Length: 220
Image: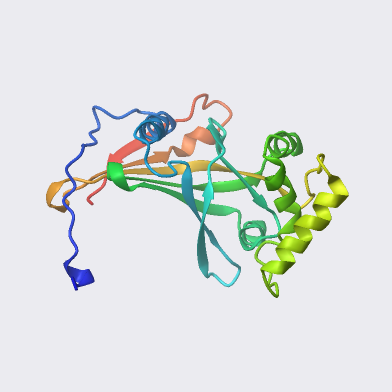
């Protein structure tokens, strides 16, 4: 059996240069996400969300991005889950996309807030019926005695709401507003390309206008 320490991969698919990258990190992210979708990599919309609890212990989980624009990156979940509780106490979080087949990683950091009730309603009602019932059936992150609890809950709420389940009050969207991006492109000999975008301190002032991003190359 091959030792884990002996596993190696040479990254040679692409490069990431300052000249060929966008000055706005959102545009760079959009380009890479579209390329991941076009390349048919498995679940190109999957992202890791990292939060920190009040005891300073970090935790991660994988969710699905549901939107992005100048306001930030959006996903939906149970507000009473572990991540929801941790975000309520500490609104700063980090996201990571890893498109293995393209040898690319995107890391995003910033502050998180809930999206509007209307946004949450609109997305919730666009979901398949079983997913809407599932939002009621699962007491996310809580200890349950077995899978039968979920099946029974789904049957109970299905019978209660039929084809028109409302959005649960404990379920909705979050939006991370980035102030820090990193784009990583694997390169040969472990001399990877790594660009960091940091939001300028002046970007939040009333006269700032469009956000100003400082782009820098980091050693891999």
